[in-house]
Amino acid sequence: MNCCVNCFADIQLQEQIKSISNTTGNCDFCLSLNVVIVDCDLLADTFEDIFTLYEPIGNSSKLIHEHLKDYWIGLFNPNLSINNVKQLVNTIGRSCSIYSKELFETPVEFQAHIIDESAKTLELQWETFATELKENNRFFLNDTIDLEFIKANLERLAKTYYPDKLFYRSRIGNSRLPISQLGKPPKENATSGRANPEGIPYLYLSDSVDTTIYETRSSLYDRLTVGVFKLNGPLQVITLNKIEELSPFEIKEKGFELEEFINIRPYLLKLQSELSKPIRKQDSSLDYLPTQYLCEFIKLNGFDAIEYKSAMHSGGYNLAVFNDDHFECIDSLFIDVTDLKYEYIEVTTP
Image 1: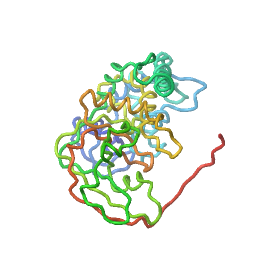
Image 2: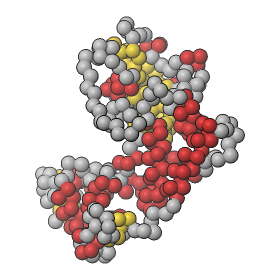
Image 3: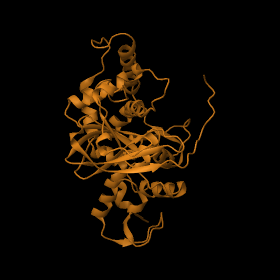
Image 4: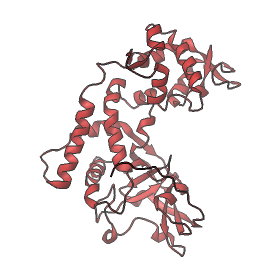
């Protein structure tokens, strides 16, 4: 049976399919027409490293195709039905040397030896560090975090944005603000943020107009001036955006071993969560100290910005830029907020 590039979301896997097949036709799984297809047998070696991560475990609730789809979110095309994912995984699996009916037709989990105590240790280390920084010692810490470990892993999450890439920043005001007032605040007005300490302003930018509008927490009928910022040179960025969507082939491309990443993933998700938390009126500026420390460490190691997901706009992301010389505000939009939609959940804890 033939699958195709459209069955997968992973760019590296799509490119691999194109490199081993020059055949176009119709896909047996996602039903795409006249697309690059490949016999599933030819992907067996590629997937075997992933399949070997798993073992049958009776008290698990997921079959291997379900675990693959849920854990490696960036692997399959999200529009591929769960039944088609099952058929695709099992077809590829039957050509693998490790194939067994038990592995592919009974509940599985990661092999026991893969998950070690390092994940819990890393999260505990972060919590201990954050507590000391906020409550005990500010500059000379007893419970420091392993900065070399953080550096080695964050560097594998580096990316580069190139000149002419556009980002956006908005300010609320009844009249249109000049471009000169759309950048970062002056030092004397720079309050603490998730990334920047008080008195040290960073330029906060968003990936889209929609994201920056949400980030301002605009009210109905507010007016905003939205600045359009153009990148004027290469920007070296550490990205903590969409860690949960990294696929196994993308992880390998970044230099991680799969077993290594499985253990460090909860820690990276913790850092992502800390940076992406919405700033609330009741927050203390002390709450931002740990992420400010992290951002300053990233800046110290020569990076220009940190990228993190927007807590206010699903799918959007923001940049905290350490040096605004990399950007020029080239234009602006003046807009009215004409509609708002609130969604909520019931909170059962205080």
